[in-house]
Amino acid sequence: MAHPCLSCGACCASFRVAFHWSESDQFPAGATPSQLTETLDPHRLVMRGTQASAPHCIALNGTVGQRTTCEIYAQRPSPCHELKPAWESGLASPQCDRARFIHGLAPLTLDSWIGVSPDVARENRIEPSAMIVVCNVVQAEVCADQSL
View 1 (cartoon, rainbow, N blue to C red):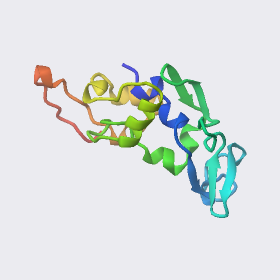
View 2 (tube, one colour; view 1 turned 90 degrees about the vertical axis):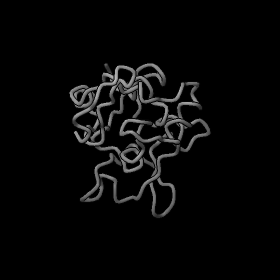
View 3 (cartoon, rainbow, N blue to C red; view 1 turned 90 degrees about the horizontal axis):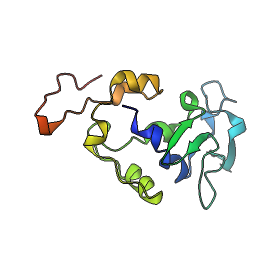
View 4 (tube, helix red, strand yellow; view 1 turned 180 degrees about the vertical axis):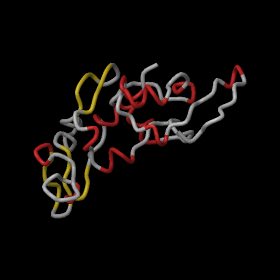
């Protein structure tokens, strides 16, 4: 089963992505490609396209709600790292729910994660460190490993 984010992308097309300028690749510890950013204020940059009235990050490819990828996944800024999909690690995510609502998508549930394995996460460039294996509670399965 594919990671739910790969058929979503709603967060990348719902919010302004603002972050400190030091995250830009123009600085030694930075990684986010500067050509994909613009200045928000003296201390912050934003991903291009995310300040619009209908935000859509320049790094998002595909169609929201169908199939999407991030062109800079490994270099994405901190707000993108910090926004977690709902229930991926067993916790709700109001931002994820709100983004999905904006695009007419149903919220993710615990069942959204049934069958998503760490291998699928790695193949799709999703960080598995926070993932848990969600058990099918209807069948009363028990997860042995919740820290992947």
